[in-house]
Image 1 (tube, rainbow, N blue to C red):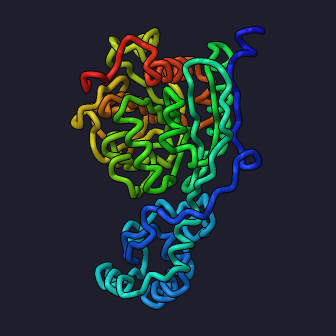
Image 2: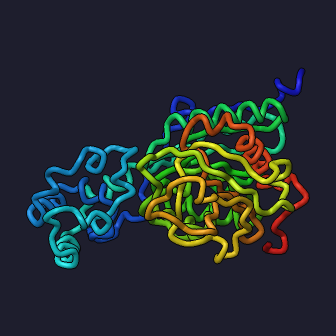
Length: 363
């Protein structure tokens, strides 16, 4: 049997996953309604929606991309506080008090938890090494073409190197028993809050105990987030925004840390077209090892400029675990760009603990 045949390409889909019991431990299940709730949770409640529309008639005219109550939905990434600048919006604190006075019913709890799942992927994984779990659950913004392109690129890498690749959009894969089978977990443009409390705990323990994380683009690009450990510790930066005029621009990616195996062979950098993220905080200040930066002189960041130090690709140690994040990857074409493909391939090897570098010493 050839090396290609030995590569694992195990696709976990809804049709092959066992249907689990409804979720009851979603993170905000019992939280009071507020201007800091996910907008979707307000819109899912007839009582909360009525209170909002009474206080702000303009809520009746929310655009479809903000008002969608079926996931994936951008409403999972927004709060009323984040859209408070719209015309006619009422006093934020008064609206907050009105919402907090509403009871949270069992129907509200059920609606909030419905976008999470306990569905486990198939138990068997195909042979190969390293063993990789590609996680693709999306409750927020769906980077559909990019997810497909990244998945296809990973399949080619797996075939070439004999990796074991398991692909799923089921968060039921995030259990201690399941995670211990994998050397690294790849978040393929995951968006929105997608893990239950028990799943969060399992993934956090996996990382701190020596697991690996690889995050692409949208996995660090949510406007509002509801899991501080994920954005502040695992990824290490909070998304601020990206240019829209134009959205896609050519820009220069500058390789900074030539000693890292993740950027080996990438020279001084390269130029490509993508949607360029800016961040509210510089991950360098939080201890991240910056591998590549964005040269803001080569594109137009507008009011999202981070200045002469604009981190784009970095690694972090999370306990004994290895975390890699790259903000590159909105356009599907990015997953055919030679430099970017080499970066991702080497990042997977590093995160899976198969290179000389590790995080045993916390660095």
